[in-house]
Length: 141
Image (tube, rainbow, N blue to C red; front, top):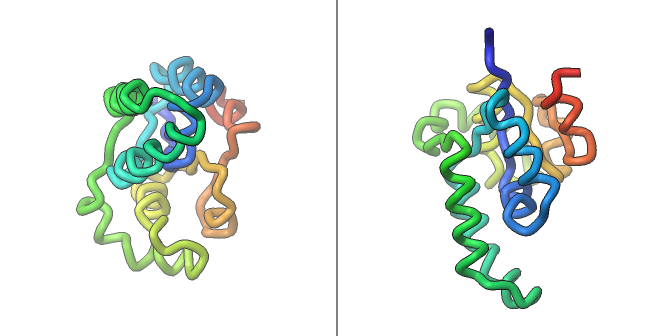
C-alpha cells in the first residue's frame, strides 16, 4: 500500500502551533499520511513566532516547543536536496514569491500536493489544498 503524502507550507506550521484544527489534522492523519516540509519552513516559522507571541501575549517557549514537536512528526526535506528542482520550481512560482520555491520543488519531487493558505501557490502547476478542504484529501475522498 502506498502512503499518501502532502507538503506542508510554513503558514500551516504556524497554524498548527497556534491553533487547534491544523494540529488536530496532523495528529489524526499522521499514521496514514506522510507530512513533508522543507527545512526552511521550520526556520521561517521560528522567525515569525517571537513577534506573534508578543502581539498575542503568548509564551514563546511553549510555542517553540510545539514547533519542535512538529519536527518529530513531519519529514523534513533539506533544501539542498531540492536544489536540482530549483529552476523548475522558480518558473512555476514566478514573481509571486520566489522564496517559496522549496515548497513547489518538494511537491514536484514527491509528486504530491501542498497544504497552504498562500495564494501564491495557486496556478503554479501543483495541486494545493487549503485548510478548509484538506481533510477531503487526507481522508482519501
